[in-house]
Image (cartoon, rainbow, N blue to C red; front, side):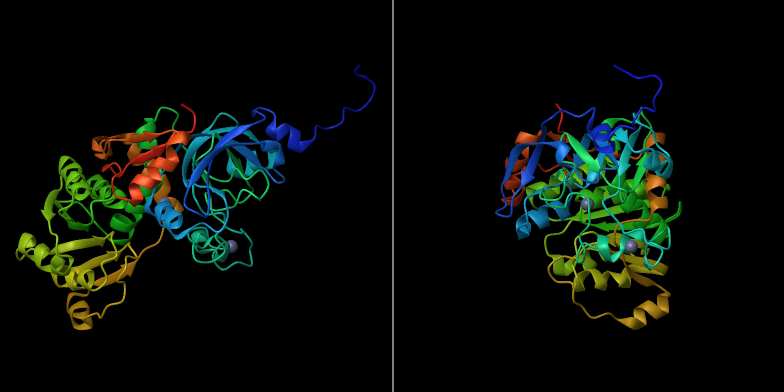
Length: 389
Ligand SMILES: [Zn+2]
Ligand SMILES: [Zn+2]
């Protein structure tokens, strides 16, 4: 019975935070032996949840596949391109994130330390370089923390995800189509690489090496600024040919080139004497990518967005000086690019609506990874885990 004369004790913060959640949250847990099982996880095990997200979608990217193939260090709920609805949050984070329960958001994968003493976190545009959040360093990232930490629900391949005070999120329009919303993060990368760093504008000619996930996103980014021509190079495999067809439907010219060593020659034949303002290597070709600098127009940029198997190569510096051109490595994206990505997706006509969405439930994650590793998987690069049917 309530005593109206006394002060009501404030509720236990952890209890408040897990209140709308089921006692058992279904999650696809990926194991170090490159298998995945669906497990029921108790969200009350969370020790430092600053909020909870009901996951709408978790899009698969090449990094997931690499990590999975290399063998994870510990059982992990993967998935780092996450969209969802906030179902609970602490008052402090409501203020800090400027969001409310019920808001639809896109997460960034980085979980930066946020300390004023951190070189990266002290600058708002480059927190992704925080050593804590580095893919090759601290690995404090969405979809990389093990299930032994707190609830273990730190990735998008689960019905619900724990948010921490380090989470970086962006509000999404409620009416943005779900297939397009799932493009928020890779499209933001592509906007940063092609437009912000590459400098593509309406008169530009853009070449993209590789028609994969980020290659297709790069086509959309080039299209968004109305470039003059987009050319996409891909191999003569089943998957690559299907993806080139998608790029073509988005308005790109395509080049099928199976000899990666001859990438520059293939590009030269297509570009004739016109050259390109921006060339984006999404594959990580190494030397053959550097050779394409000979087809850059004055002030052109070669954007290296893939690590690949053969990243070490010699550069002809004379070519760069004579053309005042640049070779730039890129990683992730600036927060401003995420905002631009959301704006462009909401405005429509990115061309990404031409990319078939391959939707997979949690039970399908194991088979999905297996099929992608043995190259029998779907050819569309837009693969989206949807934890709640
Ligand atoms: Zn990714
Ligand atoms: Zn930091």
